[in-house]
Image 1 (spheres, rainbow, N blue to C red):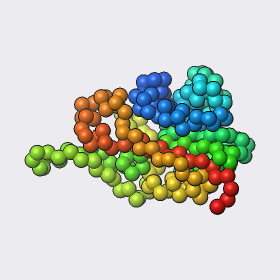
Image 2: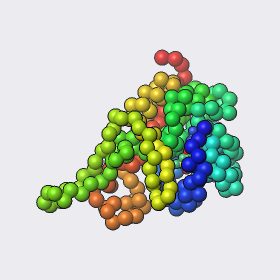
Image 3: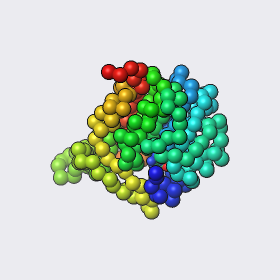
Image 4: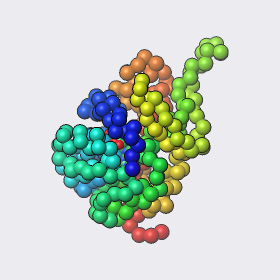
Length: 246
Ligand SMILES: C[S@@+](CC[C@H](N)C(=O)[O-])C[C@H]1O[C@@H](n2cnc3c(N)ncnc32)[C@H](O)[C@@H]1O
């Protein structure tokens, strides 16, 4: 199921990333989710958290179910209401009938989940043929453990570049994302996600690599560096459930 850390730190997530306070959600993630799920009316939001994407879809008229294994996320999702219905479940065992949804969204969840292939098989199972899958990840190439902006003062003038960590090594890391807040991440290379989807029966429709949005780039003076504004933080993978076997 889930990691106890999500129960401990749900309030951190809710305070810092939801309810309109995070520009990456407001300016980028939620609009992209809405755009790529247009016309898909029964939607499942896996790892829904406190439900910000589920609510946005419901506000547009979709019939939405949000699932998350973390009690302290689902409680807040229910309290924030706005249309979706909610339940507690992990991504590798969805209490949803086979072929019963038109769309699935999974946002910043699978990088915390060990059972990736089982979870992708569940996404494919619940989608109707031709149904839409929208997956958002912290960019698995450019946001690996130990990646980040480096200013090299050993050369004149100092050079600013983006360091990439050990990309091919699949690794579990526990990162202190803020003082006292520890979050567990599972890093895996991009091909693990794409090949897992293809094997599960989901065909690739589009890859999204948006630049960090303006509201993020103005958060700190160092984010003005060209290397930050040209390095995507988010990866979106859009796929459709294959209608017939290959
Ligand atoms: C970074 S939050 C994202 C929440 C929401 N998708 C959003 O974008 O606002 C990650 C969420 O993944 C959930 N999660 C952790 N393990 C999970 C699992 N095995 N299956 C489904 N969700 C899981 C956590 O409880 C947490 O709510």
